[in-house]
Amino acid sequence: MVLEVSIKKNLRDFVLEVDFNVRDEIFALLGASGCGKSMTLKCIAGIETPDAGKIILNGRTLFDSAKKINLPPQMRRAGYLFQNYALFPNMTVAENILFAAVGTQAEKISKLKENISRFQLGGLENVYPHELSGGQQQRVALARVLTSHAEILLLDEPFSALDSYLKWHLELELAEIFKIYGAAILVSHDRGEVYRLADKIAVMNSGKFDALADKNEIFKNPKTLAATILTGCKNISPARKIAADKIFAEDWQLELTAKKIPDDLKFVGIRAHHLEHRAAAGENIFLVEVAQVIEDTFSYIVMVRAEGGKPIRWEVDKTFWREVAAEKIFLHFPPDKIILASD
Amino acid sequence: MELSPLIITLKTSAVATLITFFAGIFLAYFVCNLKRGKTLADAIIMLPMVLPPTVVGFFLLLIFGKRSAFGKFFLQFDITFVFTWKAAVIAAAIVSLPLMYRTTRGAFEQLDRNIIYAARTLGVSEWKIFWRILLPNAGRGILAGLILSFTRAAGEFGATIMFAGNVPGVTQTMSTAIYAAVQANDYDLAFKWAMLLSLFSLIFIFAINTAVQSKSKNFG
View 1 (cartoon, rainbow over the protein chains, first blue to last red):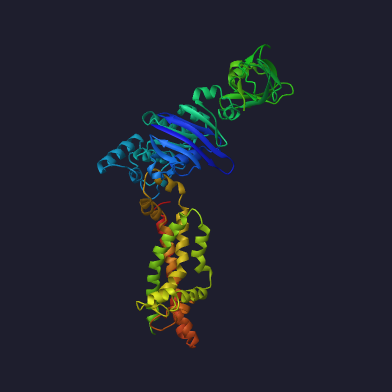
View 2 (cartoon, one colour):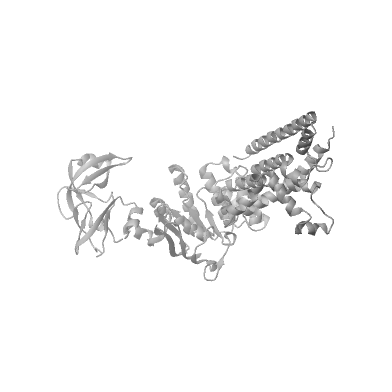
């Protein structure tokens, strides 16, 4: 499976302009709501029309503004999984799945049976969608897409309507499906979901790709402010380079030592669980005052600040914090864990 | 009591509703899928509902009259409209069309757009979407529109009297018969027709409610 997308579309608040290729992999679009990620998916499926550009799926041109090609959604073979599942309310589970099936009657029935068992829908064949739970509805929607002629799966926030327990179970199921059906675009605002399911991640911000990389790379070294925030970094401060290996974090009022500092550095970040407790001062170790302690489910969130600086969030194991709790503590900012963002 | 107004009313409104049914669904589907000019198209179709029926009747007279191009064309085949039973049907259809169109369009638009998009991305043809998804899911609205149009057609007065006249045994419907009876000072007869027409409308409104409720039990 190869999908090539290069499109441009004027939206109300910004211009959507993306350019990427997906080949037999799970490609994630990670971004805040309204950044244009769902719109990108809709353009691929043919629900929305870009102003310019090209979309090519397995050598077939789905859209080409220069050649005036714009295939209707019916001919694109892009299976779209809607956030609200969009099951046909007047049809039973079996009818929903069969509605878009292709092939002879016997082929359709065998596909139906295969997907009913794969998605554990046995016994629900004659039930109407409104009688199903959210998780079951999603499984029917997935079964329906996989029974159709889809060559790629487009998943629009697949878990947003579910509670966290169900979410986890469906995520496991989806991971299984991805193993068989290894080509999909996943749109999400949830970094955990994206990290667990995707191979490659594009961080989207106001209609453009802020960063596009392998998932390990993007979480380790986000490079941009939007990517840093979206990958879940809680501590971010405007910063400037003051020496070859020194930066000054303005919000925190700290002078940090770091490696490979870009000249155009604008922000510095450190993840809340990467901060380390120390007994005494040293390089990148600062005496900070504990401003607030919040008990979370499995850890303490300790808000600390250097003199004159804004609070920094530190997440620490419960038992450990009980041992080291004090009004002032030494915290280490490991140089290899410091995130440096240029824009 | 001469029963022809009852029979004429039932016949004209049945034929008018049949026309309205198909035209209303078609127009609703057409307007829903318009990319631009939606508001204008909607305004034109809704016009017969907001205009005084006498104005609608007057326009119909101008359009179908013997002096118009349209009227002249049909005259070649010896077909005339004014003061005939056909005119009563046309008047009733035009006046009840907005009701059928609006309720159907409302029912179409109430259906989640994503359901239509999902069907499209799954490769289902527009024709199949219309028959198997749009119509069944809009069934309640369409049924309500049908009954409303029939009731409106049956009670039509202004456009009918302008365009079809009030010819006893030919174009005289229940509502025009009431007018004629009052003109002739026959309050007894007017009262009988008025009661019959009220009863008739009451039964239909009751029918809408039952139809909509029993349908809603099927799927939520």
